[in-house]
Length: 75
Image: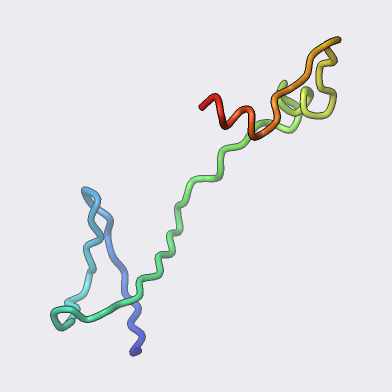
């Protein structure tokens, strides 16, 4: 497979190449996307309430958490 590299603009949900590409109808292509301005992944803060509860879960007497199967059955 011949490799081509080009810049494109993403507008209205469509990638628009900045060069004129020549493909034949039904030709298979492999597309790899690299972006310079991908926003950072959102995550919970390391010192937030979720991190605190994960490190030190609440202990409640006579409480039995659902198993994965029981939780899925309730879905």
